[in-house]
Length: 223
Image (cartoon, one colour):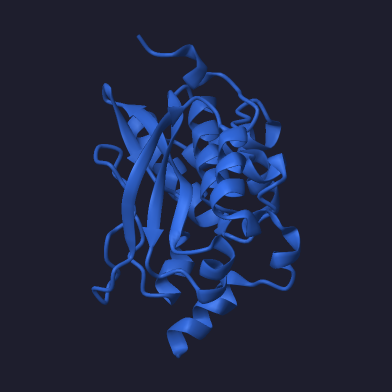
């Protein structure tokens, strides 16, 4: 039996927020089947909200799908929450999945702040389509992928879409290390506790002053 929480508004999956309702309906457009709607929503969230890993991780609003939409930028958790919220607006059950990943292509500054290349609680969205949950990962926007030679994640609504293990140059990219399970909302207390234990510098907002992930990536790729 489907958990009714996967269709309800939540603290960080604000499917009742007017901005999210308008965004979801406008992006779905004329699509009618849940699968077609989900595909359109995935690409809309992926490319409308720019990926930015420099966030105030100690602040709960950082994990909000609504805030990511308002700001036009966010990191994987907020973008996954936004996609889940949009899906719920259009009556597609959605939940969040989390995993620890090794990002072999992170910038030196981000690795330093993170205390290594293992990033805890990476998020994706689980969408109920055609009688099964399908993983969608809307984190990396297309323009960023094209600039930095990373393969963009496509989504057809039928097959899981998670980060590729290699980039276009066959360099190691993403490696999934451990799954934390699925949740009806962002487990923000668990995430912050994990960051405090494993990578406390990410919780220090002073570390983000002047940080520009796009410029760091451009410098790394031109080196």
